[in-house]
Length: 263
Image (cartoon, rainbow, N blue to C red):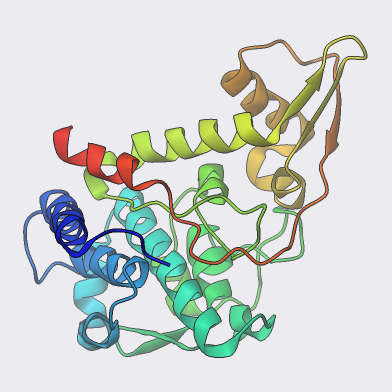
């Protein structure tokens, strides 16, 4: 239920649109703009057909030309993933097929959520390999669209509708580095428990499932040390149970989104 009165809602919508315009080169024909606008429409429960159509008809050449850097790829595909998970979950309900069916059309090409996460953002990694093996069956196009280097922080940005998932934020090209750092620090500090007496530390199972992306157990401990500012080499590491309870529309607080305007 939306508790905002119409006047405040209008101001908030205006603010959000200004954020996306400002941080997407102020070009309404810009592919990054349309990805952000699609996510905004999802958040506000607006009709997404127009933005989906604009993303469908963009040429593959223009898509690849604009998403030339890893930062641009991460910005675009994180927003697309989070928007389409919300769209598809409302259309299809809570089904595992939502991740594998190619229901997302970008540049006249069909993608699945798995294509985006494991193919593009995780550089065509095999989904079930804990981040250690590439997918030998990954299509050539996915390989061309994929990031050059896996950024483990994407795991703190992608939302799959479960209660233990990170919340959804609006990512922008100019601020993607800081935003991913913020997402990592926020998620780890909220999901990690430390017992200094027994020298144990437990954190989200996300880091276990994709441990190869983090550099194994040693890499996970380094990430935790960076965030928590503790020496954890002698600590025993364990992982919390993941809460798969459905939690759709888990966006970050509006205040955090509005703050981007002033930065």
